[in-house]
Image (cartoon, rainbow, N blue to C red; front, side, top):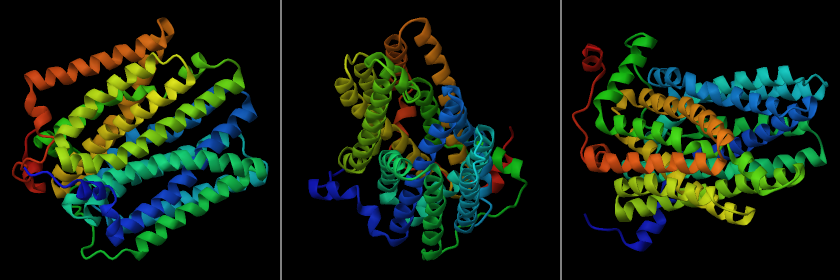
Length: 433
């Protein structure tokens, strides 16, 4: 396979933005994502300040994240039945309405921790249902050769929002109030609605609801099982979620080891979180050029090894500065795993089942990540944080190495090899369980 020229590869990162529909989608979601991260920071700070307990901040985070793991398969089934553009617009309007409820609660002095957490939980449920709609639309907005670049840009904009949103929230809260922070988030959803309405789609993105919802979910499971690439991607994201991803939840614990005092720990946590986000943005922008030069499969496998190696360096970092540098590398390689495996599912899932298979992918990530975080946290309490992180990283390296030696096809199917014969709705429905 001929290699692309360096100039062509360097442009691959931004090439999806040449397509009008994707450009609208990208910039609108960046605006909305910045608003969402402003909300995340503001809600966490608000409930912690009102209760004086860090556990409430953790509860709010769980209220947002847990629905993604539980409801994504349902969202995937709906996204294969309904007009994706129309229902994405409806969903964003619903999120704007829930954000407006938070504005009202804050403005009237009724933003109790229970009320805020309940509204955030409802917003998390809506988000969980919308993510498969959003991700399943990407291959309809760009040609096949730009799907990886589009997925990488999506990861980049998410992490750019993680960098910009908290900083903007801190400024708004300092200069005005929580109410204005919530208001900015509410308005940000209209950017996505406007972009969706402005898109020019030659074919209406809509699935055919020929069977019941639960039958469709089971059909998506069979489609994922029967397509080797999707099966491998879901298995590997589950592995990564269990062994690698818990570093995200344990960043405050690492900060506590490197700094003394509440303010210093908070500052260190912010620096480490920003480092991960910056590294992820850089890694996402590098992904498409590297894949064009070396092939997607080689890049994904490299990241599956490089991420746990980087985690080992991060685990033994003796200072905030060295930990920031190491965590930037972790962010760059971990985002390569997420974007690379996500692209495999988007490209290789049968078109009629794309959203459902993506929903299963998201469920594997969303459910297994908190389990891994709880286990690594318990191991860290019993031993040390470094032991927990390094132990999980070494296990991941050994598992990937074992796959390369004893089941090489599991890694080989992550590449651009021709897919197996397409699975149809009728043939999958007839497949015995």
